[in-house]
Amino acid sequence: MILCFSGTGNSRYVADVLAESLGDMVLDLAPAVSDFVAEWGAYPSMNKRFSAEGSGSRSGATFVSDDGEPFVLVCPVYGWRIPESVGGVIECANFIGSDLLYVVATYGDDQANAGFYCAQMAEKAGLRFGGFAGVLMPCSYSKVKKMPSASRAREIRAAAREHIPQIAEAIRNQGELAFESSGVRAVLKSGAMHRSFRLYEAGSKHFVVSNKCSRCGRCELFCPVGDIKMTEDGIEFGPDCISCYACIHRCPDSAIDVKGHTEANGRYVCPSYREEIEDLAYEDAKRAKKAAREAARAQRTERAQAAKAAADLAAAVAVAHGVDPEEAYRKAEEAAAATIPGKRKGGRLAAKRAAMEAASIAQEAAREPFGRK
Image 1 (cartoon, rainbow, N blue to C red):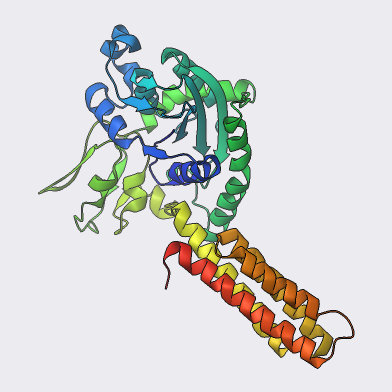
Image 2 (tube, helix red, strand yellow):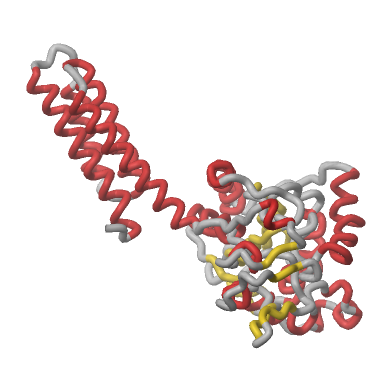
């Protein structure tokens, strides 16, 4: 079972890719985290009662692995550690069906020594720790970092999609996800610097709401810990902000800012994995169609070669997106056979037709799985 907590969508994206690789399901942790924060606060280490009672005496959520597969926590790194409230949910939870936990964390700059604290969290929860893996995703900490361009963000997500199956393979085999801190600087970041971040930088104390706010309520809806209320006077921030910045990046009016930093650095919301794959599939299919049209315009031998290339591309698109790949391959093979040197003009026309048909199959491959018409 994959347990996911996400603010601006990066961790949910990674969780969905991981779920596809593992054939597993994703459970949204936001309700459990919201309940935890309501009782213990966003930073339970600062709650003396939480520390005094011990995790064994606290009631929490129950997570069940029906097939005995390990639990996988997917969440972001904030201030060089995973959110304390997320860790608190894990420490207090009841785990049934498996006692093995992996942590896959998204980060936009530096994961530092976050894995060390995840190992401590697993120990407090009474779980075996399978290891920690970091996945680089577009940074959303707009108070300090400039948001990546759309093209750069897409490149980063593409690299993540390449990396995640390797993590999934280790989890599938219940192997160890090895992690190491990167030296003294990493230890300092996740230690003293994290405590400074928690005291002086985290939270909503630096948030500013402009008169652009239309009171649509999306900030309240998307706050994963329920720390925002929409009142007659406007937005009211509570004391338990965990600095996920979901309200800032998801505001349709761009009305919430961090003392001008967001206006200067931009906003970012990660698309869903399904949305992005749909878009990529559609672009690939259009590319196949374009290649086939170029094949139709090509002359003599070049026409046959272009037709073969178009058919091969169309077949690959269809296979990648799961619509009748056998038919696409058959058309591609027909196109390839028609390009044999010495074939008469009719052979080249057959290649062109095969390419067009294969490209049509690719077009359907991009449409049907996602319901695009």
